[in-house]
Structures are given as structure tokens and as C-alpha cells.
Image (cartoon, rainbow, N blue to C red; front, side):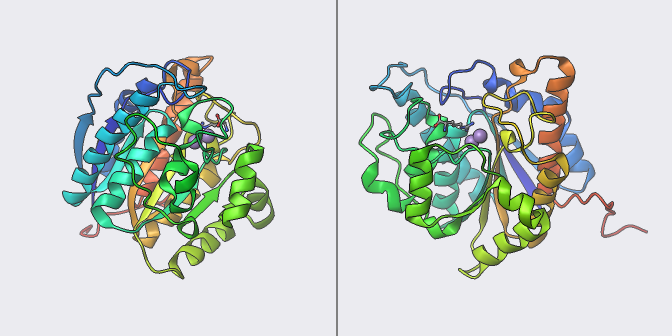
Length: 311
Ligand code: ARG
Ligand code: MN
Ligand code: MN
């Protein structure tokens, strides 16, 4: 068991300043030390260096070439981390980075399952988005089924769809645009919105998620965790907070459960924006929650843990 950590201090998939501070802030809250304490080997690959690309828009779409270029770099880095044999951790940065992260993961290991924990579906296409922000669109670039709906864009020609709609599960949705809702229904994507979490409870949601994914074969799991899935009373320092989210306990339970399956192969932790807390306590609460979610991905159990060789 080892974690390979990539920092992706990239923010141009959305317009609010500060989300590029996520990786360093999460590191300085003790992520690496605490992973080691719980018996996990850690290799930090540092923060990616992105080329300065011109920020020009294409119609509504903001910073197209920058988003395409950064994700290309991330995809290569992610592939390398998986080739080195680690469970990959991508610290964002905004959620447009899931394009490179999932693409690179799949380039290394082949077919994947994706568990997407988020208030948002992030499945707008460049033609359906009305904000023009790429962090609301990554899934449209990754799904085979949406390939024909995505136009040719500068710096995106390297992206090849690598995921089938049946291998994707969403958890926590509560702010879905009409076009996104239509796409989810049309493709028959498995969605546990926050209403299903209310109705079934998080334990049943996770059981059904894993049943659903594993009846299709035990593919490596990519967990893409947007911190705004959690209720903003706990994680306020994020760009697009939505009321009525997952509790801290539900949020951590999801990571504990996936970790226990032994299939977790890569994790994204995105949208932590240290500049958006009203107080330092807001920022700390957001960052500490992000760290706890990541520890949960590496076999930490809240009941307690001890080393296998403990005497
Ligand atoms: N649906 C909105 C959009 O497309 C919001 C997306 C928010 N995404 C996120 N990763 N926080 O712009
Ligand atoms: Mn979100
Ligand atoms: Mn998101």
C-alpha cells in the first residue's frame, strides 16, 4: 500500500481565485505525515508545472487552451504514478482536472469504474454549459457516449474518451443543470442524489454502488471527490457551495467503504479554495475534512487501527 501524490495547482477551469492553493494547504495540514503514521508509504511527486498558455476564450468557454494543456500534463503525470505502482492522489485545483486525472489513470490501467462524489454532475458539454467554466464539463470529455457531442477545441485533441456511462456512479448530487439532467437520464447513469442518501442512508448507498460496479467486473476504481459534496457548514471554503450536503460522517464513510473494497486505484480531491473561507476556522475545517477524506481512502477506520505486526 503506497500513495503517490500529485499537486495540480490549477484554477482556470473556473473563475474564482485561490483554488490553486489547495495542494500546498492540504500538504501543510499534515497529509503526508498522517498517511505515514497509519502505515502507508508515501511518494510526493510535487506540484506540476504548467505552461503559460494564452487565456483566450472560445465563445463562452473560458481559458480553453490552458485547460487542455494543463490536463495533458496531468494525464501524463497520473499515468507515470500508476506505472510506479502507487494508489494515485491528485490534489486540485478545480474539477476540470478530472479530465487529465481519469484519462491518465485509464491510460495506465485500462478500463475503470468512476465514483464521482459531488454536489454537481460536471457533465455539461462545451455546447450546453452556460457558465463557460470547464470544471462543470469534465465528464463530457471522458464518456464514450458523449464523444459526438463534444466539439474540436484547441489543446484538446489528445483527449480520448475512456469511460462508459455504465461504469460511472454519482453520489451527493443536488445542483444539476437541466441539460445535465437530460444527459444523465438519456445515458441511464447511476445516480445517488442527496435524496437517495436521505432515503437509503449512506451505508446502503455504498453497498449498492459497489454491487452495481462489481457486477460489471472488478475494475479499478477512480474516486473523484469534490469537496463541495460535503455540506458548506463543514467545508465552506469552496467556489460553488450548495446547501444541504453530505455530513462529515457520510463523507468519510464513503471513503472508508471504498477503501475496504481493495479496488481503489486513484483519488482526486478538488475544489478546496483556501481564499474563500470567511474565517481561518472555515478554511481549517475545509482543509481538515479534505485530509480526513484522504486518510479514509488509505484504510483509516474511525473504530481505530493497529499495525499488522503489533505486539
Ligand atoms: N453546473 C455549473 C456549471 O456547469 C456548476 C459546476 C460546478 N462544478 C464544480 N466542479 N464545482 O458551471
Ligand atoms: Mn461541485
Ligand atoms: Mn465538481
